[in-house]
Amino acid sequence: MNKIYNRHEDPFEWLPGLDASEDFIAPPSYTDLFNRCDQAYDDILTGDVLNYRLDELKAVLDKHQDLFDEADQLVTVYEGFDHFIYLYDALISAYQFTHDQGWNAYFALDDYSKFDMSIERHVLDWLKAYGDLNNTIAFHLHFNTDCDCNNLSYYRISPIGIHIHHDDLAKIFEFSRLYAAHYAELLIKYMDISWEEYHTLTEKEPLYYRRDNLFYYLSKNKNP
Image (cartoon, rainbow, N blue to C red; front, side):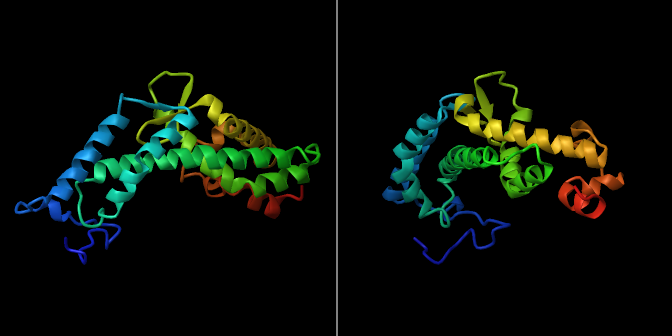
């Protein structure tokens, strides 16, 4: 194996793997690993839609962890394991989002409960503090917009069609609804724009360039 070759050296333009060459002769170790990756890939893709409870997803990750680690050591040299590596990596991302942001949402909601939210300054401080969390959650939940599986028990959170059960997203949904409700109230009050209008602004409209920075707009135009 060529240990110097790195097809990922340029992250924006990956090179072909050594195994893509017409004169590549696969050693037995390569063939064995390729077959195991191929089998694992097929085992994971048991249907058109990947529906998981969080504990089920964790079990899949645990089952194939060692294989992923083995294949990942060779990913900069060979491309024959990419299909399994990319799928497994997407499953990791789905698990981390659901688990990590679920806990972050829980703590954000707990923080919310500690203040008198009838005071607008407390609402503003909370929205500012958890803006990044809201953006992360919104990014993943947006994938469900293009979902046509019509399964009300599962929610798509991944571009490749990974779905998580609603019960495992409960805190994420609760936080997202609460954040959106308060944000919508401030949009109406200080920018005279509805939540729906806010999401349909185009670059031709001056308000578009302030649409994602309500707090800056407030600091410059109002004194809440």
